[in-house]
Length: 282
Image 1 (cartoon, one colour):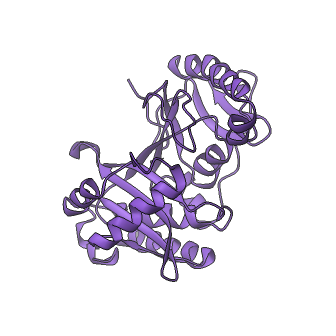
Image 2: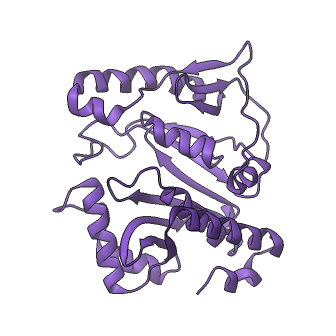
């Protein structure tokens, strides 16, 4: 079923907002040279698992199984793929949070190795945004490793999502091609799909970047933690503990991450009033 077919179920979200989100998604997919669509068939599920193994490794213990993926799609959750011709090169998987929250949790997103920079990830996330809005879902949350600078920049600057919680060693050790057995600290980000910040980012004209004030703090992140894990595992672990020791207490005390800079890292401001763009967590 297409995104547009669900507009009648948007639960108070203006049809114009749903339509604009679908157009933004189509434009980004065209720029990336991919077709993004939902995946429901058994052969598609096998292709998803094969791609996840290509990205993360772990052929004997994949991040998700075919059987569970089939159950997710049958229950109406989000599973979509980006295709270059007949080749699946990107995937995004999410499931619903508790109904009252009207939130989707985006669990896995990945692009085939060697294809970074084409905009495939952006095409997938904007398809997810349009899909969510068409179903009355106004926010999407997911986690990412705060040491991975390119993901921090993509999530915070390109998409307009904002971190709301620091989660130390959230998954436990993951011995795969990306995490390398390191502690799996994560930042939980919340993507407020109709906020001015996100609307602007998805239209291709991001809001003006916030500037640091006298009470703001910068928390540095490594330029390329993945390469560092390969060439100097001890230094990579040092970065993990250093960033955790700085960022976790700042956020626990009410600090809000409002920006990320590739050179200077995270910009953290002191406690701010709740808005439609930043959610306070317990």
